[in-house]
Amino acid sequence: MADYIMTEPATLDFANGLFRDRDGKYSCYLLIDKSTPGGQAEAKAIAQAIQDAIKDGTRPSGNYPAPLAGLDPNDQNAVKRLSLPLKDGDKDVFALGEHAGERRADVYPEFAGHWFLKVSAGEHRMVDEGLVRDMSNRPVQASQVYSGNRVRANLWFAAWNNNGNRGVQARLNALLIVEPGEPLVQGGHGGDPFAGFGLPAADASTGGDPFANMGV
Image (cartoon, rainbow, N blue to C red; front, side, top):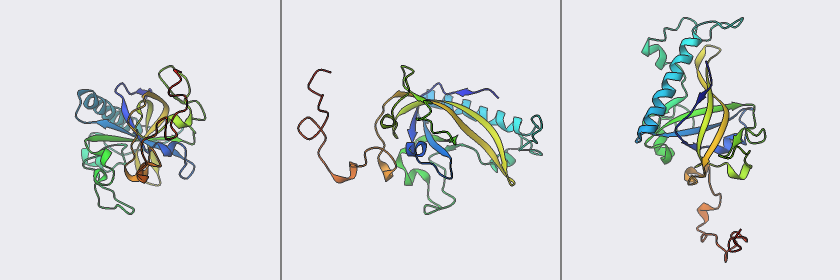
């Protein structure tokens, strides 16, 4: 299927996953507001793109076998057994790890009131490759990429099959930072690493921006 371009800004979370690889792969999360018409429309469109990827996955492509061979895309029970990238932050429960059995929103409060989309950049270091840009179409610096950025994404949805475990992946092609946004610091997975020390806010008298009062 064609690239999917998000029209509604989402909130970037676990941005450190774009810099620190896990098993050679890079990833992040996009949080979509459930309370806004724009967020609702975006989630609906993404759900349709995932459904289209499921249908495509039931058919072989060239010399490659169908990753979802034998699946009826209209069988909702069968579809629910797939690993899908779009989930409800208020309902999703960790199945494994130290938080097994806990609601995601209870562990990471910013997920409350949001759908979330896990996106994979594969082996691509997005920032280093110039695939994260600002509204002027300029590649951004690593320091400008953090959990809390308001972003839009260019995505590719594709079915996969790994030794019988099957699902749909959201592949990240490009990320556009629409606006900086408020840094997320809950759980220590993003934002200011000094946030927990109770330090005063940085300003000209406490080691803030030395250019702040110079009119530049």
